[in-house]
Image (tube, rainbow, N blue to C red):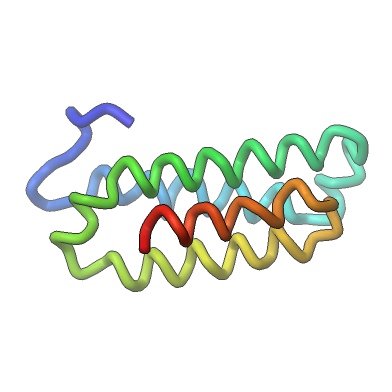
Length: 104
């Protein structure tokens, strides 16, 4: 979350979402990955969702100056919905609501 990653083009640091965080969470949602550690997967998914939220909120001001904010927000909401509906308990239910409240 270094500000040194931010550039005028916004391509390098927005890749944090498309090249790192979204693929990571997509992998964590796969059934075969869940089967590798069913007991620890809930905590891992919560940590990934928390990381996604923190990175988004950290760059929110810079994102608001670009045209990628809406698309990125929709992808985040979609992936958070998938995490909430992954059957991992109540730990993930409060994350999207808190993220939504912080942004709006």
